[in-house]
Every structure is written in C-alpha cells, then in structure tokens.
Amino acid sequence: HRLFDASKKSDSNPLTEILKCPTKVVLLRNMVGAGKVDEDLKVKTKEEREKYLKVGKTVRIFLEFERVKSAIQAVIDSNGRYFGGQVANACFYNLEKFRVLDLAEQV
Image 1 (cartoon, rainbow, N blue to C red):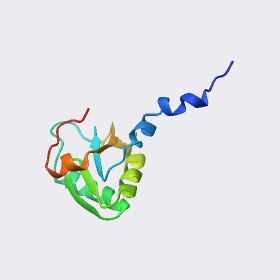
Image 2 (spheres, one colour):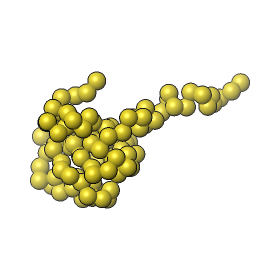
Image 3 (cartoon, rainbow, N blue to C red):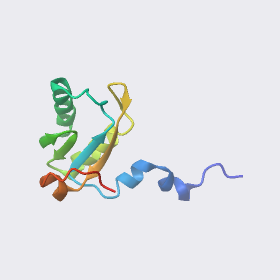
Image 4 (tube, rainbow, N blue to C red):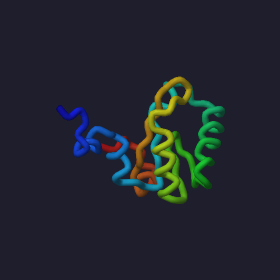
C-alpha cells in the first residue's frame, strides 16, 4: 500500500494553489478578531511587512508590495502563523481591484 501519492501533493497543499497566481498585493485574513483593530495593530503590521523591503501602503490588512517576489515571501511566511492568538492566512489580491479600493471578497 502506498501511503503517499506524489501526484496529489499539490492538490492537498492550499499554499501551492495560492502561489499559482501571485500579485504584489497580499490579503491577510484572521489576524485579529472584531473590535481588536487599533493603532498597535497598524504598527505591528508595518513592522512585519517591512521585513520584505519597502511596501507601498496598507489598507486594512491589505499589503501592497513593490515586488511580487516580496509578496510571495510574505504569503509563505504568514500562512498558518499565529498572530494575536489566531492563525492567520494570507493570499494574493487582484492589484487593479486593490488600486481602485474594490476590497470585496474575491471568489
């Protein structure tokens, strides 16, 4: 019996799917609970994103990086990480939608 099927590895790894269509914009989800957004969160988020070089701007927990490579590294490092007692998840967000502040959830 085979316990591991290498052909199904990418299907079972959600990060692999996320990394298929990278952009310069990262959406961080589940970082804080409702009512927990404050100035301290803004500072912590800024410190965290600056690990990946200069970032254009932060809107909510949307991060726009200058380079896709930096955004990819941020997604890899942020997914599954505990932040404020919650497991954060990160994905890429459409750059054009972000730039016009169309921040509705993507399908």
